[in-house]
Length: 68
Image (cartoon, rainbow, N blue to C red; front, side, top):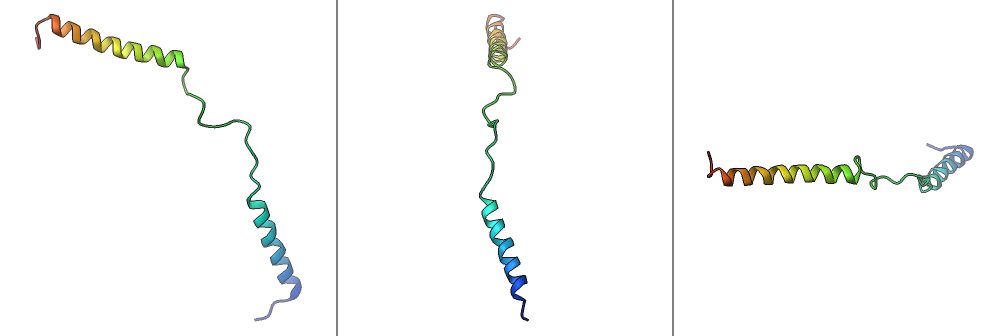
């Protein structure tokens, strides 16, 4: 099971090329994870509506005399 010197050199060169290429990952221009799918104003409005409607429901239940 002998391999020729030329074949061994070619395999070694390919291996070394893969090793050096593996670490060179290009930086992306757009960073992921910092972008929200909706704007902060829309999110604030949604939270305002949800909390406001739940408070309105609690106040309406309390003034009507409980679970009626």
